Length: 142
Image 1 (tube, rainbow, N blue to C red):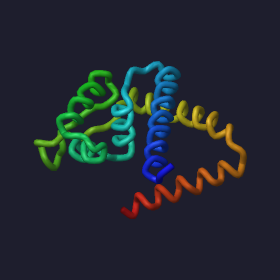
Image 2: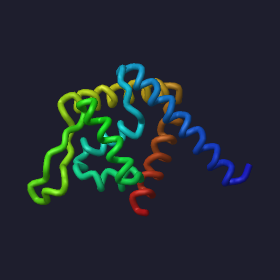
Image 3: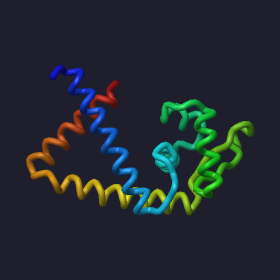
């Protein structure tokens, strides 16, 4: 198997894993938010308050981010207030309902990841952790 095919296979497995985790979380938390919406909630929780910053971080257009935010606002998960520095811009924050949902998502994700990780022996866990740290470290430098 070539390096490119190994990377393609890893990418495919990673996407399957991500979709499976999200499905499990959605079932457990009884919500109807998409992966993209969940990632926006996380970005806001981490202090990203401007639409353009969220769009850039999520690698989506500002109009796509606006669409997702409208859905999150309609679900009362996100609120928007006018910036005191620039009245043309709104700052985003999670509502108490959004904070609660995000906490539920994180708890469910941790629980499901623990279930997967428990399938590995101690040496495999150490190897996996080392590989993930290496990948993250490399990404931050790029």
